Length: 256
Ligand code: 13P
Image (cartoon, rainbow, N blue to C red; front, side, top):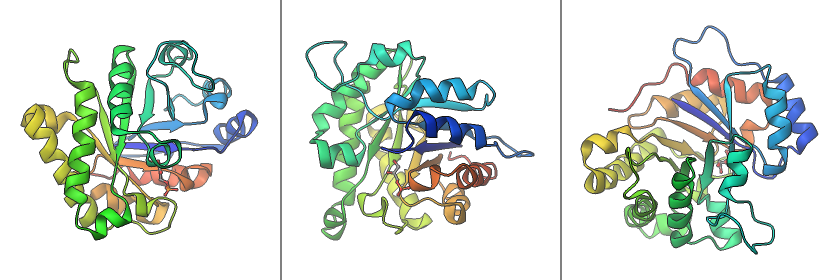
């Protein structure tokens, strides 16, 4: 199980430090989930500093450019993340796609570049409400997953990627997909992975769910078949609610 927090554009350096001072990993868990936090890039050094007393949390970046360096004002490169000892990077979040014009082709480039630099991409896929109402969920997920896999193709030692299914209509809306919806979508995603990579490799790729995950619904979602963890937005901003979700991840079941 993986419990990941995407802070989006919240928690500047001081506030990141304060979160991590307050965050206490739950104790007495049967099986500890892996805990990742994606702060804004500027807050990463402060978060890292505050983490020295809080070993269980790994840090990631919310975005990066695919190029190593160059005239790309406002962007952050993979080597810059590596220099900050960052290991994880979100790629293709729906907010990047919707507000910053990130395309499937960009996602392919970013996944490829992340892997080339030794970073572990957590690539986000998910349909909009309109696509869902048009009955296009499978088609959209297939197209997005294929672009992620194109970026991972030829990567030595396996694909090295993780996926997050984040239906756009469930993000920040309080409207969570049901565990049945999530299982079905994850099953589709797993099917596409298996077609491209074969069943064995497909089984190794964690698929997280994101979209209005809260302490109250986290356990049910993580117990659903084919769900390997959650990617939490709003409820990851408060140390106590995030800790409650981490605790919910300790009783979950692995897919397989
Ligand atoms: P919310 O949990 O706020 O719906 O956000 C989900 C998300 O986008 C995580 O990446």
